[in-house]
Length: 411
Image (cartoon, rainbow, N blue to C red; front, side):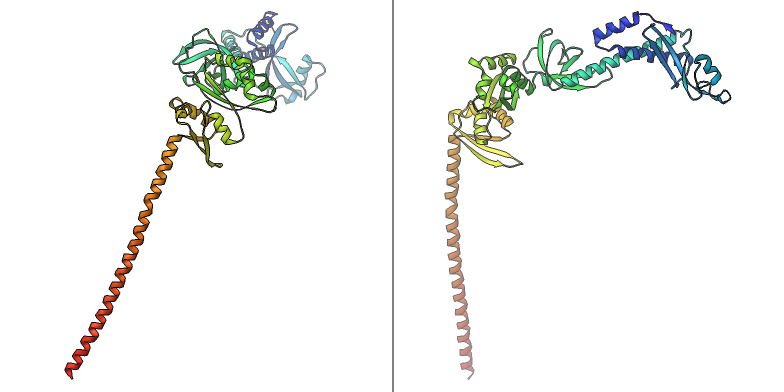
């Protein structure tokens, strides 16, 4: 046995406090390292019956080989078996068929064996750290967390979120946002990828679920389940629409989200760097839901064009002065309304609809004379056929008269 002392256990306890790696994992890593060092020292690759044992009471560690006790004349493999007489020298009450552990700790391991043990311990500590980080952030996946911006590399923002640095790709950043190193930031844990080193955590600052988490934090009615968030559509940095529904008739879903004098919504807007937020009242009636989703514009009428499992389409008519507001800058308002409701929305102004209806009436009127022409052509064709028939009759009469004249002349 090799005397280690209390320093090893103190180091294990310190690592447990600093890195969260349990003492049992470190001791198991040390035992595995001792086995690896023994194999290196003895120049053997496979030895299933070798193990290292650490005695915490005495602070000693040693390498042991497990052997099967056989009759003195039946020893075939000295590495796997031991004779009964030799076994009794170690353990007096041993019998044939028992297994005993025999210490085989070398007196000197050597530099190569010690280096091998060091590599095994280092590798096991890294694996333990990776597993801890992986387990922690797999539990945080799909939730909000707070981190500190470390640096910007190749347009990716590196954010420290505790035991590891997370990556925020450019597509998950808010357009126009300046990410200054040292600033605290609230991010959404998007994905966790397992790698050979520490797990790679992907976070987002533009995900729609950030808005959901912020509302759940600021609005107690949502946390209690009284008010329910039905849908969210977001274009990060510009505008967000959120549809809410109250399960209690006495609680106004929109008012609960706004808060007294707008205090709750103002806190969320400040957190999102003054991003505009439209709180929409959800409705099971698609017409009412579409009208609410197109706020702040006013709507004249909504016509459902298609509503089945394959498509949901609606035609919305708005006043002339509300057309640009309903569509939004670069189509943002109607695009967010489409994402929020799941309906394809076609917007027209009142004057556009009137012109379209007038055009349809004109097309209908122009088609009527064509039908009269067809009737006139039919009458003309009938007259021509009657004249042709009369001519055929006249020709037959003429031929009959000519035949009679010839007969009379012959006579």
